[in-house]
Image (cartoon, rainbow, N blue to C red; front, side, top):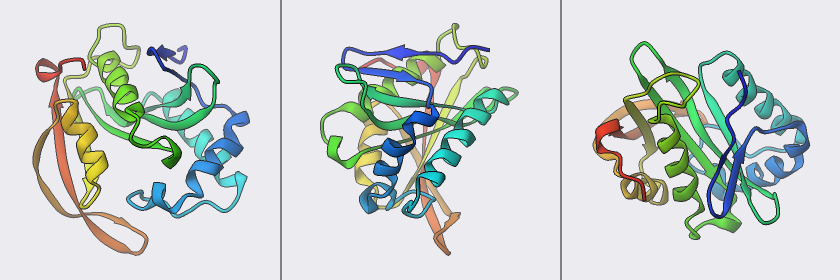
Length: 185
């Protein structure tokens, strides 16, 4: 199965490669980026290469897909986005994304996530038909909540202590988007 490449007016979304190791390390060494993430700050390129392998293996196993987010004009890697888990039997997926803090506030996250949602709800999607996409946001991550709300996700409630990382439990706000509710931005 060929990895799907997507494009917007400003971005290219494609497969991560080993050559992205240093750029991904630069993103994940930023404490602001990983503040609400289930990983600690990276301290070696080996960690970013392992993450690239993990993301690409999930696609090969048909249980997830993660795109590199690149600025179209330069090809620079500025983040990733995708579906951390895909359950084809239930026709749903869990969404995730992160962006270099140097590119926050410019609409890149909304643009990239809108594009992968449009793709996921299309009939061209190679991993199978999806009807529901869920995003779980750690309490306090207002920027990520804003992205999902802008894209039409509905807040569905708090999942108490449903996340455990950095040696503590985290309450997560659950957001859901159904295929008939999606409207492109």
